[in-house]
Length: 157
Image (cartoon, helix red, strand yellow):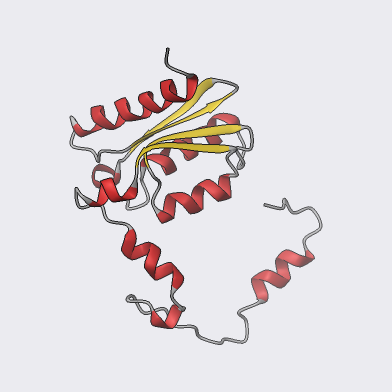
């Protein structure tokens, strides 16, 4: 007997496999709430011309739209593969309850989806990264934060 987590994880894997048949990337994600699928995402990077169109991000976008919310606290994400650093960030920002995944990043690296270089870059100081990150001290840098702090009716996130 397959448990519910294996069932939903298989749905994510099936979505990933199906996506490869339409020349999409081999990644799929499902988001559930109260044991029901509310969103599905597949890797649409190449056909959307969008490097952020990963399966997990696409599923998060769909779930947020469907729930009319920017947080998914009561939701669970099932991914065909361990999320990359970008998706990991999106998952934390969405505040999902749990994440289940099938293949891991080492499996993905074997087919040239190697995220280790990004994980390594994150640990470096900005000025030591491969892609130059240059901090410019400008007098108005904190103006957006000051404006935010003054807002009375802001929505914290």
